[in-house]
Image (cartoon, rainbow, N blue to C red; front, side, top):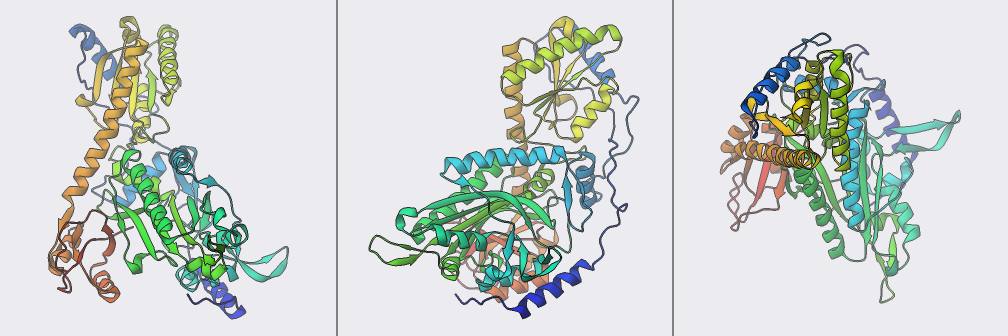
Length: 556
């Protein structure tokens, strides 16, 4: 593949381009300021009856209904309903759940502790999978010589508009501009070329957790920001077959995480050529349908072939003593996944987090009416907390006495905590408590008379968490399937897209055809799903036979 050396003219062109972006306007400090008031509303007293005396349950309902009423310290502010303004709803949740705030530099965000805890959950699950599949963690420099990017022509062309350049350091102009890492293929190959000498050095399987910078004109917290956190895997192999197997394996890892942990029923498949990663032979993707029915590219895996290896001279001596270029892959998933979780599961009361990913799986809220109740109620609540911690359940006991139970209920609903446990003086007297599901508001989501005995209590919570995880996934699957339309003509596609749905149909168009569809409908070809029908159909756009099924949709 053709490639060029770094030249001053190209550097000056990029420098001027970046300089014009820096002059662009950005939100004033107060225009989107995040306040921390909570939406408060009266939580509906509800029950899913468990075996217990009728009178006991009646007393519990009265006690917990009183605890759920709005009390001193609450707020009447509500987040914008989804149906009214989806974009504002999303930003309201990010603010009210204290997930992130705007940074002082245009397009940057500050990830707050609760938002970062969700990202840590993503890291925890994925890192375990990477290591289980033989990968090791490493770290590469954030500053990359511009000449590195120019070695792979398609790569630099694809990333040029997004580059952030460092041209001065230590009070002096640099001899060569440095790119603030947009991705690490070039830096990784510079090192791989030094590390790989023989077929015995392969495969080389590495992963990096870090941050990258891509200058964005239109930003939104978690979904598209100038700086974001991610992981990027980089591997080198002796054969094309091994690289292809690796690329497919890792998109499978992402799919399993999205479905089984994040509860997002993604569609996995292959990107079209013009939607593929700059410098890749093939790009695989997982695409999730968000609550507004737009597509979100949630993770990608690239078969890079030998493109970067040839540009950087990354070769090895094979078993026959011949020098060969390595075959490579790269794959990444970012904090964009946090945004995907918000938009897939959130409702008009705030976040709804799948238990497998929730930083807090269970919150225990003591209910005390008078000082005399405090000691006995807190003692019982602490025992429940200890029971859950011993069972490896992520649990929080909210012992704040300056906030009402009603405030706490709504606070943790906003934060999407899957299960709430309520403990009051009557509960203590009867050795029972009440549980409430975040995914089922009202009567059907509460269970009264739950035994506080350790084994029974733990079993009940485990059952609830598993049920909530499955319920959120099934709800998302139903929503996705109801909003994918099978099309057999371009008019069908235009109608489906106009209705905000995904269009699925046979496609055999070329790059120019794909661009025309995008220009006319604002929909892009999201992927050719791995799950293809047995018989290929006739392209709905060109009339050509032997077409692959593709999905078109508007996307983030």
